[in-house]
Every structure is written in C-alpha cells, then in structure tokens.
Amino acid sequence: MYALQEEDFEREVKVVVVGNGNVGKTSMIRQFCKGHYPNDYKKTIGVDFLEKNHYVKQLQEEVKLMLWDTAGQEVFDSITRAYYRGAKAAVLCFSTSDRASFEAIKAWRKKVEEVCGKIPMVLVQNKVDLLEQAAVTRSKMF
Image (cartoon, rainbow, N blue to C red; front, side):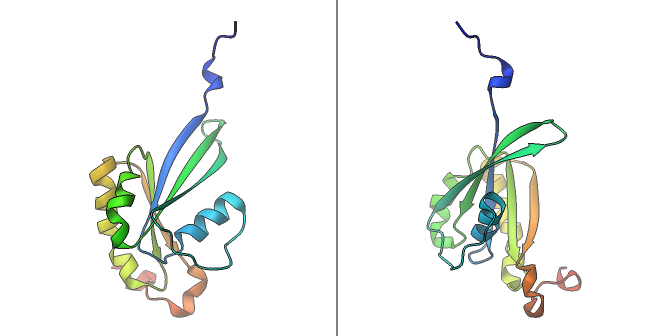
C-alpha cells in the first residue's frame, strides 16, 4: 500500500482577476497562460477560468495558479462575486485608455475584500501599448 506524502499534493492558488469591462483582463490572462492574445474581443459572460503551473523560486516548487477571469460589467456583478470565494489573491486591472476603469479600482478592491477579506492584491495597468490614447498617466493618476 502507498502512503501519500506531502510532496504528492500540489499547491494551488485561486486568483480572481477583476476590473471594468473591456480593460483587457481576458487578453492578459490568455497571454500569460497560453502565450498568445486573442484576435477579437468577446465580452466575458459571467466567469472564465484558466490554469497555469508556475515555478516559484522562493518556494522552490511549482504552484498551480487558477485564474478566474470575471466579467467587468455591473449586470454580472451578482454572478461574479460568488466566484470570489476561496480566492487567495486578486489582480485589479484598469486600462491606460479608460480613466473610469482606473477610478473604479477602489470599488473593485472593496468588492473583493467583502467576500475574501484582506488578501494579497496587485494593481495592473493594461493596454500600455495605447500610450497615445492615454487617459491615465503617472501625472494624471492622483
């Protein structure tokens, strides 16, 4: 009979990715997990999910990141908030070319904290390739 060892269990981390609609959450996640950007825009309805195994040098082991891509439109809010449960980290996204998406970050953080408590979060400015259309710059942030 085989006894399970600690090394038989993978580390899994659920990460929710939130932000207004059309800030590039799906494209960012697909690039990270699959190595390519989608060619066309399709609104996320509810939630999408991708996984990526990532080696963490500090832990000296692989960690499975379970990335939950949530819809940014308010109409899906009651659906997507249910998927925040169990998240151990969050990515708060805004678009370089959408000032309102930056201004909404505090609200997104609050929504995540209401369900998950104080978990590690990172702020991501997306669409930095659109600097000529920038509505959010370092000097315009605060």
